[in-house]
Amino acid sequence: MVPSDTSRRTRAEIAAETREAILSAACEIISEEGFESIRMRMVAERAGVSTAALHYHFDNREKLFAAALRYSFQNTGRDIYQANTAAGTATARLARVISASLPTTVGLRREWAMYQELWCRAIRDPESRALAIELDRAQQDWIAETLADGVASGEFELCDIGALARMISALCDGFGGQLMLGNPSLTIDSVRAAIWEQASGALGIGDEFPEDLRR
Image 1: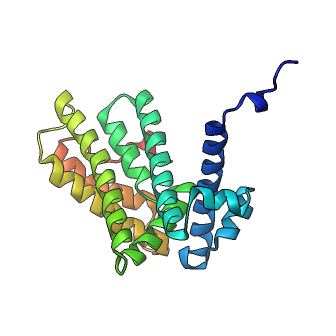
Image 2: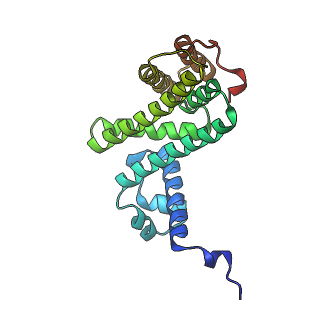
Image 3: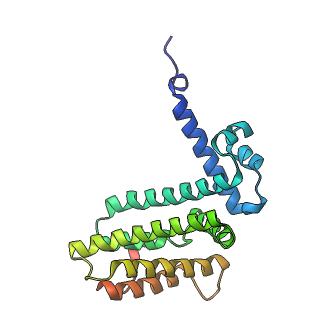
């Protein structure tokens, strides 16, 4: 008898699939209900796993929350880099990073809702504060890497990469929060244009956000 695909799966593979299902479910529920409202049972039900399986992977809500944020952030980064592999220019890469740093899609709005939960907790909770700083630095690193590649290739003018990355990150955070609030004076296109105008002057590139990279 030939073993089925299911029987050939290792325990590690099954555990990894279970963990991913839990993290995906946690992201959905945290963005929908807020961290303070969720219960471990809610996540287990959404993920289609037992509460025992959930507690095997995560001892408490706090650890699950931190893991869910990292999971969401890493998925965004993976998508950016997959797109960048085919993109070519540093200008195109920077445009994608900026778009991915704003609530431009349903998935990114969900991620933003989670970040806003984190920022509220970070005011009072040291562990949440450390995680918020960690993710903020990771975002700045993505931006800085793109800027450095553009400078190295001659596509961008020489600039203070660290300072410019921090500025772009801060603009994305500020404008992104306003978009999440539904500020009627702002649109995604106007926000991207404003951020791009600030960045392009320092980089010596066109001051209009690349039309073909709007999404």
